[in-house]
Image 1 (cartoon, rainbow, N blue to C red):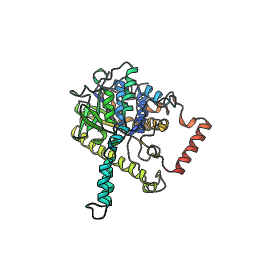
Image 2: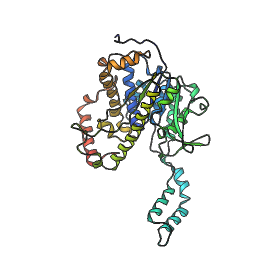
Image 3: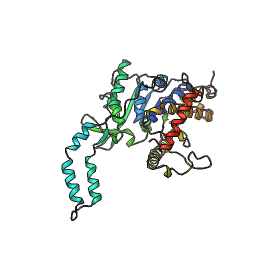
Image 4: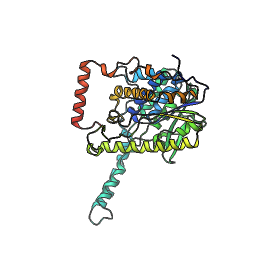
Length: 394
């Protein structure tokens, strides 16, 4: 079908995938699947891919030539026991054992603080016990192993220079407090899978990843999306997918019957994290748009009043089918609502927009959630009622 606005020229286009854990990455896959239907230019045919945290895994797959349809079919619609995303719960026993050697000295100091006449207090004694905790409770080596295996199966070397498209994976140097973009000139000697492992090392949960003698943690610690990296590399159109937005729980159509504080500490902490990440990103976008008026930035993200995206823990792999469908539909609805504005914006950069009204409401090859079998729908409803009765599954 002929688009209403035809593309005039081709600009350098970058895709930036922000973090958000497993559910965030799966939401991004759904959004990318929608973009494949909406744009006349393949998501694999962009000039630069930037990935942060969970988005680094997705960006690496795209830069390696794995299409959104392939990722969707294997990670979401495929066999329920076939995992594209790596196993996340792998205990970091090595760190735990190493820390246990310090237990006698730490316990002695804690006891000295707690005893009457000591220089400390009970609270000092309790805080000193934190020294026994490892740098991370879990081991993220499964991230590296899974991505390396995917690249191997596709015949792509685990090397930034071997990728079909330019990729930047952002991690944070823990001791310097600086963001590092692996894949840039001078930082291409690191295996792609190792860089992605570093970018996804959420502090406290996963231990830092050591690369050439330095420790790295999650790239989202410094900035939420690192859109500036794409701008500095000459992108004139930046497509940014951000799955982490705070829940808007107010007004006549508020998604929850009461305040978030009534749902417990898990909801409070999750909302606080989302507020911080989203607010930081909005501030950055305003500055980038003011400083670089020649650059168009198109952000795709969940609706803030969508409780379905908020209710799933960011590491919950079992919700991938629902979350991916949410990403697909949210992206499609955004293009339907802003069809003319988005068509004009994309045309400025050589990309034509297909009519969003003719794009399927559900991803091709995936049965819509609304028409599942009665048994499946009844089972899902029962599980949701049980989950609500037991409290939020965080």
